[in-house]
Structures are given as C-alpha cells and as structure tokens.
Image (cartoon, rainbow, N blue to C red; front, side, top):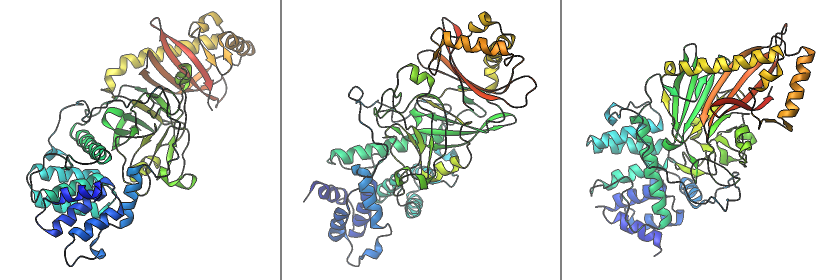
Length: 479
C-alpha cells in the first residue's frame, strides 16, 4: 500500500461505519487534492455494500483538478526564473496582527457569499450545533465543490461524529510533507478569513495612503498582505467608502518584490493600466486580469526588475488559492474578481499594496492634505511665472524623466516658459497618494490646462523627501 493509501486508512480508521469512512475519505481527498486512483482505492475498500459511482456527489473531475493544482502541474502563465538571491519564504503570521476590536463569530453576519457561509459553519461549531453545522457544510460543498477549505471543514465535521477535533484539518501526523504543507496552508487560509471578518477596519476609516482623490477617480483598491485581504473603495461625494473586501493570495515568498522571478508581491502605490478578459488569457487567470504599472518610477529608480504583476482570478477548477501561492500577483476567487472588474476603470484606479495597511479617519489627514495641496500649488505658481530658479527648487538633483536629467529638463522648462505655454496653468482632478519605502514618497496625478484652454495633458509626478523637503524625482505626461 502506498503512503497516500496509508493516509486514508489512518484517517478513516476512526469512523464507526463504512459509510462514514467513505464520506470522510472523500472530503479529505478533495481538500488535499489526492489522486483519483487513490479515491477509487478508498471507495472500493471502505464503501458501503450498496455504494455505486452515483453516490459521488462531487465529480471525479474535481478531484483530478485538485490534484493538478496540488502537484503544481497546472499550466501557469506566471512562470519566471527564480532568483538565486531571494529564495527564502517570508514568514508571514498565520493569524494577522490585530486591526481593531475583535467581535465574536456570533456577531459576524452571513452575507450569503461562500466565505460568509463558511464562517457561519464555524460559528455553529463554536456554539456546539454540530448537526446544523454539518448540514450547512454539506450544502456549501455541494454548491461549490472546488472550495477546498469548505471540503476540509466538512471532513472535520464528519470526523467529529466519532472523535474530538483538535484543530482545523484534524489530519494524522503521519501525512506526507506535501499533504502536511497543504493542510497548513488551509489552516492559515481559515485563520485569515476568520480574522478579516472578526476584525473590521474602523467605520469610516481609510488606508493612510489615500490623501486625496478627485471625483473622476470612482474607485480605489488596497491590499493588506498580512491579512490576505483586498479592499474596494467607492469615491462618493463625502469621500471614500469601503464597499467590499475579499480574501486574496500574494507571492509564494511574501511581499516586497525586488528582482525578476523572486516570487514576491511588490509594495507601493500602483495604477491599473488595462483590463484583460478571459478570452485574452489562459484558464490559469480565471475570470480575467487587471495589470498594474509595476515597476513604477520609484521601483525603477531603485533598480527593481520584473513585470506582469496583475490582480487576477484563479483556474476554473479552483475556488481560491492559499495565502502565499502566486509568483507575485494578487489572486482572488473568480466571482469576486469579476465584481471588481465590473466596477473599476483602468488608468484612473489606484492600487495600494502594503505589508500592513494603516487605517486613519479622513479628517485626521486634513492637515497633511492641506500642506501637500499648498506644496503643489507652489510648484504650479512657479511654473506659471517662468521663474526657473524658484521652479527648480522643487526638483531633486537626481531627477530624471525618460532620458532627460535635471539639466535637460531645465532646458525644456525654459523653452516652455519662453513660448508662454506655461503661463497661468491650472491644475484639475488632483490625486495624491503617499507611502513609505526607504523614504517618504508620494505620487501626484493631475490634469494640466493652459490659459484659455478647456483641455490639456495628464501629468504624473513622483516626489520624495530629501533632507526633510519634498522634491520631484520624476515627471511625465501619461495622457
């Protein structure tokens, strides 16, 4: 008997009947992604006398698909050459750091989503309502058979009919390394999901990076790597409002991407550049993708390499991926990605990715917002006046724009001032987003409209603090 067969024999030995042994084995199989031949062995060894293949409510295709995902043999378009200097996984906490007041599971509403339904099962378990929890878990696995964490929970509940459970994924210690790793990933996924719904951001709070967004920016996205969570905000008349959030996966080796193929997710402020439909992609990306502008100008300045960082879905034979399982992208369930893609607009939607988001009340940022507005207004006045000495005080000695250094940039500014093109420039649709990466940084996007004109160009500037003063190190036209 092979090792995986031994796993089934050990797990199912605790079940009092052949029917229960078969049921538990089936859901452990779906959760771990073991092979169809092993499932056939388990069925023929432990199935009830009146068993037939019609009893299998989950198609064998789901088991085969789970195996492909588990063994890493699914076609992956994200393949890159691993970095020789960055192969140690980042140790991310299984349970994320506290966000706010933790509410009991009994107070977590069931919104009808697969995650909400799973949390409802956990709540029922906590209340000792095992029969009801079992029925809910069974229905969830029937509705979404490729939701592996739900399958594992259902297997736990079946096992609980004959023996006490010690943890999520109450599997034997003799599991193979791969199976043990997968169980650990599912446990971490469960903890991240529970924590995200128990510890909510303060009502009305927003990530600190969102300093100012114009009305033309309808939505904004933030990703908290420590919580495996993606947050969607809507820009309403009274400011940003959190409208949705979902479980999400990041890079296999954690966060802070620096080189091509390091399997890490970048940290910083980015923008969605385009929208890719499933018809343009392989099935690996699921419901589609939202490419980001990594590397941004700050990343390039630091020599960071790599590309193809997207927010995307998962293969159609999967429901979700483990917390750290991508090659650097942010991945989430297909229905949830589709809901985001239907709302956001490329080019104007910012995406903040942080190790841990810092949440603040919008009014607490008013002083900083006013100060940065005044700074940018000072730049505008200097540019409109044609005072080169005053204007150049806003630029870093290390400034670059494409192939132009500061000296060449000065020549361009002088030419524009001489022709009067910069006279009485107006700024419209100002967006300011800030973050910290070795220094304080901000990216500023605005429409620049000349005197007596109704339209103009869209500019983007990257600023950093040098010796305590804000300086522009990149400026360019993006539209």
